[in-house]
Length: 168
Image (cartoon, rainbow, N blue to C red; front, side, top):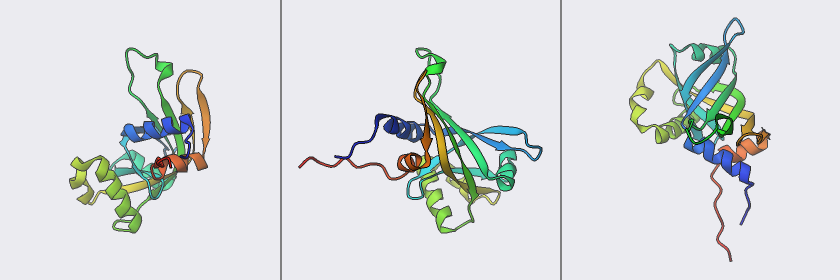
């Protein structure tokens, strides 16, 4: 049976169980701009997927400057100190997907698998899917437990789920 390191597994669980991220982009003036975005994971492409409106400020920012950052965290709990909250900051590049392209179709499928109630929005002309290719991350699994994650490990986390092999 192949072994997945504990922290890699924790990162996989975090990204698989949380559905919201804080997206960081840059405005035309170079100011940071953050917004909340639902996200899905497209495992064959190994990327995150967001669905954005042409009216959103972050959409313009993505179209002009593709480099982004996303923060994914577990919700605050009364029984856990805020510095112990499991979280990850991801760095990557956004790709606006051409409607009905092969990547658009697989990203749409991944997004609707996670958010089936928004299928009607995928038919609206002012919305598009964006694939975010992650190049690295900073993973915090608790107070004093922070590490950098390279692109290779991120691709493992965002790729196909590992299959436990039966012992022979």
